[in-house]
Image (tube, rainbow, N blue to C red; front, side, top):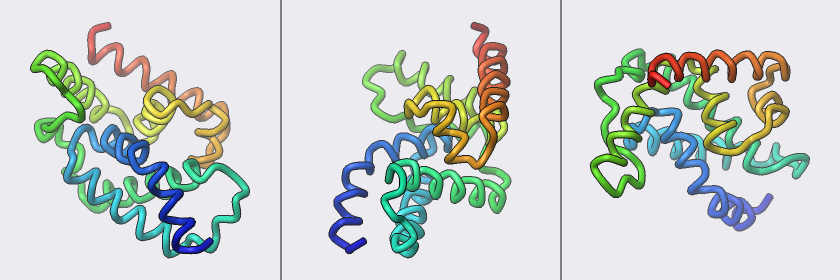
Length: 158
């Protein structure tokens, strides 16, 4: 893949990647931006490994998810609920509150549950696509989604 091809593909997926990471990082823009930058560097350095055998977005999100998990493991305070602050595209105080409440609830999920919930409900991936990205079985993804939904219902009093 040439540099120009890589740049074109990244430009087409940039907003989706940022939204995905913002959700995984529970609204922490600085963390999401840092992980996005690290993801893009890793993707560029390994772009020769991408062979058009699947969707570029799935390949990029796999790198992003793994980078997020590595970042989380090295920074234990990453899930501090009190740090959930800025909210993407919130236009009113009520909307901002609802987004922040969701991010705080997402922060209580395990990384696997959070990844599955974000990919399924916010990024629109199918269960099979999530299984491929996360290298899990379809049943494991279904279980992560079920647990994640149950935990969110409890936390959000739905």
